[in-house]
Image 1: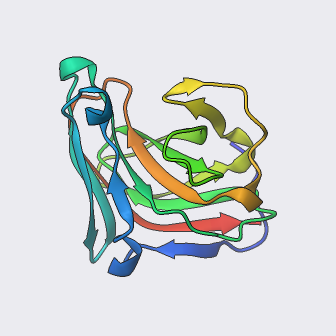
Image 2: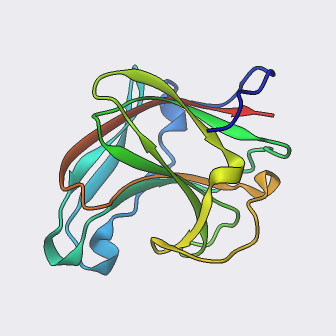
Image 3: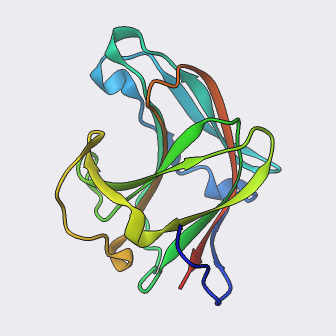
Length: 171
């Protein structure tokens, strides 16, 4: 991973505020016939992304996505997620437009079961994807980021639970 920035992190979203969780909606493998489930729930600790990943009917992913918003991230070099996981790997995604289906920029991160961790996600390490496959796309421009999302996939069947306390940015 990259070198830590000497500037302090700036808070983008504090999920301990239930209003920050209300705009996050599930987008699961049901769009292609799967039966996985997920939801975003507000708790005192933050937003809980939870559900069950099923491999039935060629499924295998669950995700949540925020409503489009102007985040003002021009000049950002990294995002920092404060999370408590379940030991599974997740992907954080960002979109630079409001399209429901299109290119998104993703990065994989691991969690430690039951431990709070600050996960630093350098902007230059995000990969452009379309429906889970790597594609050629313009370099991610932080000034254009409009949508955040979380995803669990990669055949990690069974229940999952990820608590996200906050999203911060480093400039």
